[in-house]
Length: 455
Figure (cartoon, rainbow, N blue to C red):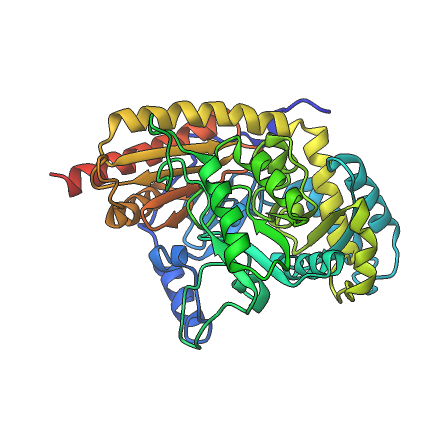
């Protein structure tokens, strides 16, 4: 394992960030307006701050008007190694000039990738298939679970997010009823532990995870047909607000699944590949899922995702028509292999853990300093700040979330909103000085917003 060297990722903090034209500038507005005549369905973060980007390098972004930003989003958890990492870019360029696609035929780079995964993924996660988006990987994971168990039902959690096709949407909160019910039959949803907003607590006020497991036991007996193939969940909720479960939750969930012959499927599309200081987030709790999905940081921006399964279920891939047209193409495999190599060579798991200490200290100070900061949470380089109108009632403060997001963006921080919850996912290659500057911008935005809204 290598040692982290910040030199390649350093930036001149006198020049970054730099806002020369109030964003969104005229070129951004023109491009965005022209594009939106035809392109619809934009994300909330774009609607709140419609800049057009031109370039990204390392931990920075530049928009078409020349404004320069620190990237605290990683393209929504994607460019975990920073933008255009030279080793990843070179790997993709090599195969873009030699062999772009050959369906699912074997290539040397695919062989190298699966051997690297067998070495670096925990336990006996030794069976793999590749796809081009996280949703496709989730759908394939569901089919593997059905094939492995002969069952057809699934349990998932409120406010988790797993993708936008029918099976993946059926695992998630129903957000729209425009076309009627959006969840397929046999998909069940249950609450998961949120330490800041617990449903069940001990007498001392701490969260009671045993009550959640007891609820699952009762739900399994009363509401399912006893045909549950898998319990599917994100180790840490992303869209739901960077919700980190108590440390005892995953071990207890693993035991619950084992008691009922249910597979545990971890959607690590967002949390995997070093984001939390481990290759898989579930390693923090010494829990090995039966099925894992990887994506986002798996290719550092190149569209490649994976399903990994434990040894007893490897042959299930043979029965589900697992291959896809784009999954595992040489460019994709080269990008993913380069990501594993960079994480190892540059000691980035250790650096992500180091950054967690830095971020925790800064956010703990915010909780003391600002009345609207109700809760802060952090695991590696995955953080969340929950803004509330009142700390006693914990009433969500959506207007504060919107204003803090926009104010910090206008100061030169590209990041992620989620209503009243601020989400942060900086590249795990970020030097300490850059991390502190980014946190300064957020701190300024929170202070200004609190002064404006609570005056």
